[in-house]
Length: 277
Image (cartoon, rainbow, N blue to C red):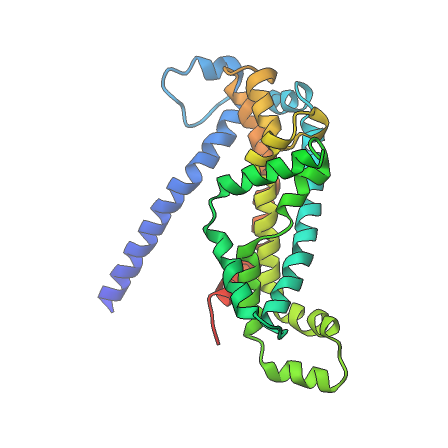
């Protein structure tokens, strides 16, 4: 009993220490964002608290560059991309999990092999394709390369495959179409995984950096990732770290809120995805 209690105490101490390490960058980001520019530059030794916080840096984040427009662009890009991807991966996962057609296993194996292709090669191919289609500096060009994911199709397919075949056969006997069975049976059962995929995809889109930087050079289509770079280079100058941190805080808050609201669904979806049978 004493040994178990000791191990529990040690475990919680370790987890608490690790939590401090993980959360410290976020604390430092928020702390820096409320420091005055002059006070920050006068700190030869970094201070872990400030006695005179200011919100002026947050005002500068929206007035020096059009950060509000970048947030709206990113919101539209994230919602549209995630919605289209959910439709694509759900139909693909259903086909691989439930439908029967010649060469299904071979096609699925080749499909999974695409995960072995380096992302750099995919980016080059997508850039060439979008450029040839004259879709640069358009939301269509931003969205199209991200509307599918081999990994998410695989994850959802494994969840669909866990649903007993008897449910499908019973539904077919009752005259239920495949699409109705998918919508009324499979999607509700696998909702935790779908929620997890949705949140992970939204985070991926919100944090997207390389592709928006390649495909857009028009400020009307800039995302927050472009905005951060513009702030660094043209907005506040490289030395105004507090103002830059204020912009980063504003950009990070929606993702933090999203995770806190749906953390239970994320854990449930991951647990279900890792369970077979």
